[in-house]
Image 1 (spheres, rainbow, N blue to C red):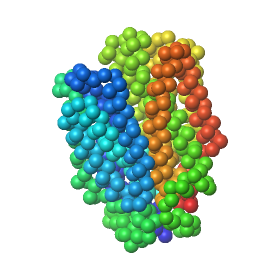
Image 2: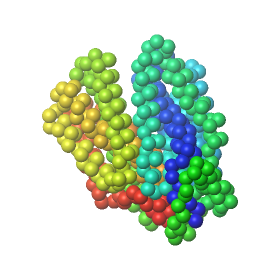
Image 3: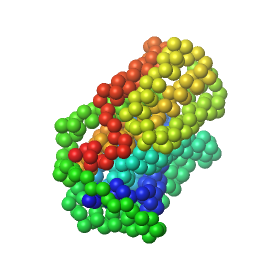
Image 4: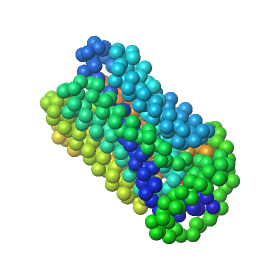
Length: 444
């Protein structure tokens, strides 16, 4: 009955407020991922950092994100979504202040590691939390309009770095980053705990209170709620969590599928987006400002594609969208391989097409991951899946560097085309459709 009452709720002001508050935290999460990249050129000169030290500082954040995604995903199943979200927000705010006052490469590396734990934990737990408030028919659009804030946060980091760091120095990156995150801490008290999580822990009275609050938010504006449609729910949906269940029964195939999609999408997109500005400047000898402008163009088109995906994915469906995106991405990649990437304009047009298409997969995988698991496994399943995002993000740039040095640019795009085909084949053979289906029906 509780699930049926949640499923009939429209997108109310309260739900919009929840999305905005969590969105602010996610915006900061995205911003902090790239903040160090724009601070680093100034830090290299100030602290006399070697290339290996620079690599360790950047890698420390990703290693922290991997630990955060796995550990806090598990913890969110035990103690609740809100407790974990609040702790992760406080953690990366504290570490942002630490980065602001870092005095050496080693201190920055330590602060970035612990900040990575917070940023790596926030998005998967937030994804589980938001998904559990919204009905099946509206879930894709509602969630992905929140998730669009992540690529916007990445773009904002670039803007701050481009305009402020040359004038005010590297600390400007961390000062600006404090603003949205500090706002989130007091706003957290306006957010209720997930009623689905409360019910899964047997705290039915508390869950009823949250759902009643959401219903009152709708009815006090004169909107009549339809009668709840009660569907039979497998008793296992309220069972205790056990992470080993991710690798048993129907969830083994889902786990392997989502891990593969994370790796394939992020290996290509993060491999390209981190490498393209360097390619424009070093290979095609473009001026720095032109190279940055070309990189901005690719990022901006990716944001527009993400918005289109958010508005349309509930109509098209997750599985057909992912199949089409992976196979469509192979076309410009093969063209780049065949043509040899001989001009900056050629790379700009075709690589932007690839990035935009695959960005619709990359940013929506948090939605799909959360739909594949029951409440008892949702946070840890999403967290462990997104840990492979970090793996793909690390492998992509390494693969580019290796192939560029030994074989040439055309082989880079050929290899990425092979990864895209692999993603399309895995989706075709193994992925399930989740569009319009109640979470408890999808995952008993």
